[in-house]
Image 1 (cartoon, helix red, strand yellow):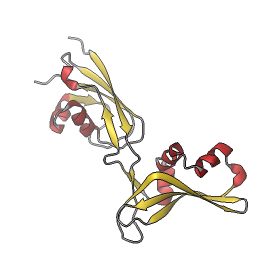
Image 2 (tube, helix red, strand yellow):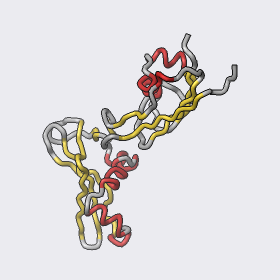
Image 3 (tube, one colour):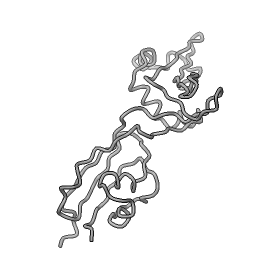
Image 4 (cartoon, helix red, strand yellow):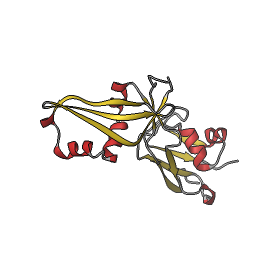
Length: 186
């Protein structure tokens, strides 16, 4: 029997909505906030701009600001980008929210619970073993590969650890694409 995989499948991890922001509210001390539709606030001070991404506390509804640009000269902005801030462009909101530098500067993390889905072909039709699967991430969704594989194949996590060979650690969260091979069960 050949050691090469007979079937190669492609799985895609897609964002279904923007993730929640884990940021402590100054009023109610809750840890969860949402950006809702995603709105920017642009404030001009002479020829300098301050731009914030607005977030709302899930518990009390208080609005807080995440600093995107601080005291930036108006001339340093591309006109299309500046227009995007004024019209609250959803792609610009997503781009900034998913930027790790913004999270580090504003001291928040993202809660991806319920904000992504796995698009995978059904595993029930596979009869030729081994099967190689390529996992691709459209957005930086941090998931543990063993849980993702268990969900996609409908196996227990112990069964996944027994039947899967992979070049990355299965129990450590990743948001980078990877390839794994599934061997036949006993």
